[in-house]
Length: 112
Length: 112
Image (cartoon, rainbow over all chains, first blue to last red; front, side, top):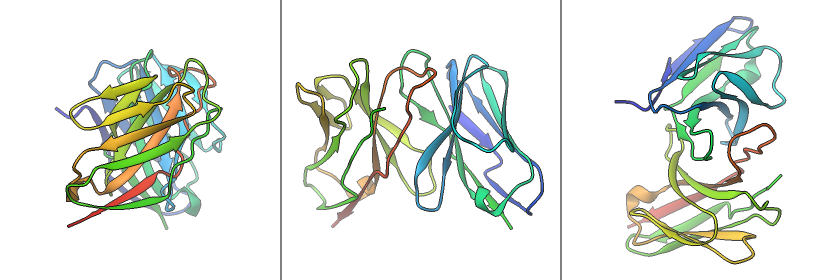
């Protein structure tokens, strides 16, 4: 029943490791997003895909690479994790013609 | 890029009406105004969206003056469970160049 789901919910890892976060939506939306929310609670867009095509790519280190195997999935792979990557990462989706986004529950990433 | 400005925090008591104003002086012709609610440890949740004048749903009302340079989210008769962070987002449909700037949001605290 969950509209936008993310796995894992919590992720604790060491600096230098590579990790992935998965996102799936069952709303039939064409557009998906990744956001980062840091300790100050600022919510910042990282990427957006429209039907598997990258349409928004903010200034994000190359260590972050989104992958969209199909329009219902948008995964986030992070290489060489750094302490500053610790944050909550939210996936979201929307219709392609309307900016009303539905967010997932978030993945809390802690890099030690 | 439509940047938004909201009060950092507001306090209210149960049963009162709460009005949160968002300023967006650089709003573009095609931009819509969307409000989200976020509880701790959860993803933002869509509340309401509007383009001009007034929009009402079962949760809130959104008032937008003719010049559209600001908007006001109105929550009728708030309860303790309305304590959350409220974000105003201004933008067109998701596409390359769309600014997805959530800003700092307004932390609403409702007391009994």
